[in-house]
Image 1 (cartoon, rainbow, N blue to C red):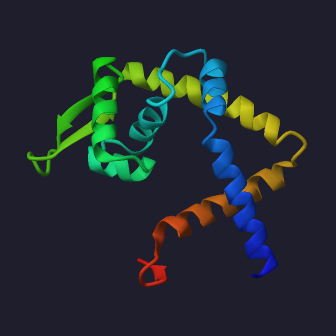
Image 2: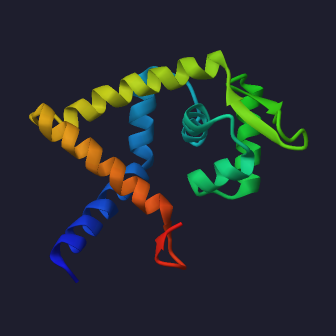
Amino acid sequence: MDENIFQIYEAVLDIVGLLNQPQRDTALIREAGVSIDRALFPLLVVIERRGPIKVVDLAGLVGRDYTTVSRQTAKLESLELITRRTNPKDRRVSEMAVTPKGKEITGALDRARERLLGLILEGWSEDDRKTFAVLLRRFADNARDLDLKGKGPE
């Protein structure tokens, strides 16, 4: 295997492993000073960033089963953190969007994430941070757009 590809793959595995650690989510929630179930906050953040969004699309983005996401979003709705509405273009489709109360929580999580990422990036130059952000975004976009069957962008 090409050494650069190997190093990238190893780094991605490390990052995914870190992001999947429950204690990391707990630390972020604690740093944000919010009260939300650890299983719900990633859904809330994705709804805020990508919404309005359908449950099936949300399930695909977070890599969870549709029925699990449906149950979890019902909980977010009962907490008044999201609302459901009919898609204006297709009245058969229901979409979810964040409420102002939900936006307060995602804002607190964003500020906490910025503080914690600041610790990770401490000592990095502004140019290094900018370059990393650009390259990481490019990597994520290319990975998202890759058609694994056709082995090229969709």
